[in-house]
Image (cartoon, rainbow, N blue to C red; front, side, top):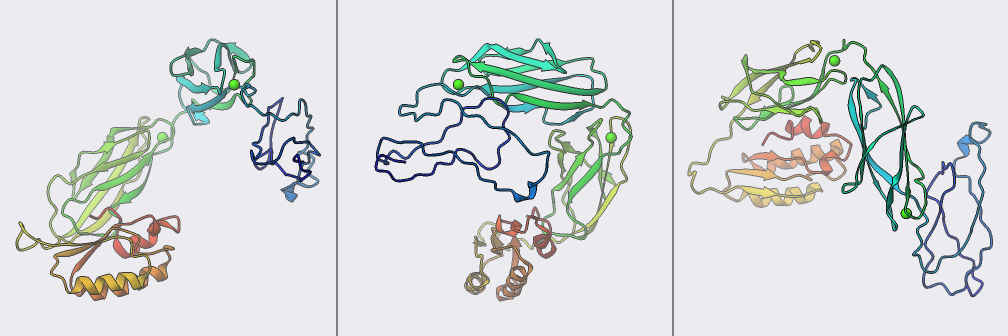
Amino acid sequence: MDGEGQRKTINLTDGNIDWFGWKYVDAPLDATWPLPFTLEKIYAVEIDKSLVGNADYKGDIYFQQIRFVYIDDEDLTGPTFHHVYPKENVMYRRAFVLSVQVSDDKSGVDPTTIRMLVNGKLVKHAYDANERIVSYHFRDLDEGLLHIMITAKDKAGNISLPGVDKKLWIDLSPDTKSPVISQMTPTQYEICYTTTPRITFHAIDEQSGIDENDITITLNGERLHVTYDEKTGWGYSLPEKKLRDGEHVLRITAQDRAGNTCSPIERRFFIREIQAPINTENFRIAVIPDTHAVAYAAFVFQHIANEDVSFVMHMGDMVDAGINEEYEQFIKATSLLQNKRLLAVAGNHEAFQGNLDLFMSHFGSPHTI
Ligand SMILES: [Ca+2]
Ligand SMILES: [Ca+2]
């Protein structure tokens, strides 16, 4: 209740709660409400009826020290942990470094209170006070589960709630699975309007990993240089010379560090070079952004049809919801461009259905230009 007897409702939580141990919970009060406040009641609302009657979901809640805070200068919450590495829950090696950043609002982390337990045993971690990073070098591990728990207190004595509670499985079994290659471009039978299309792929081998030199890409039978980032799995390659108009064959395969090789993936694609402007020193192109609805695209195309341009670029957002009907309407409207070549880039709206499948079925892969 506010000072004038008006009932006010304050939400103390954000969605479902799964708390264990004492926790300081606060919520802001509107500074314009008349003072003094009084507490009428605290109540809980069930928001998920699907768990009614499920005996696994139960708990008790206790309240202590309920109060209104008019000047918020007390430190009541413990340190928090961020960026736990490794992120994985399975590791395939005997050694690795675990690291996590710790921070605290108001009084700051008390470094002497940081405790790290591995399978219930205290271990001697390292702490970088400048970066506030707790780390530990695991060595000579055996196969099995590592249960890692880290807690810390701030200088006001509040403990981290929650601390780090991570379960990590060490798997030292032999690697028998081949790498997995996906997301390859150019896509099958794609038409590329450039003589040097970028070749892109995603290659992952969870267990032993892939060395850059063990990824083989051949273009028309000739091996290309490959650049690969093992952390993200993304890699690319470029033709070493300009490709001629017509069909080309791309093959990719990869071997992991245990010697498992995946079956080669083959892609056929076509190069159709765009006619260079007659005067290469002085020429015009049309660049269109964000037409969204087809009526706007048609309006712009009609305007461009009367212009002397060598080709037309659409910078993306030719559709709004990214549905096929919009693409078909757009393609139909391109007839207004008469014989002018249209090159299209995908914007965020082209991906509004969660992928670029429709864009690629109409325009080829999005990296064509
Ligand atoms: Ca604190
Ligand atoms: Ca493997």
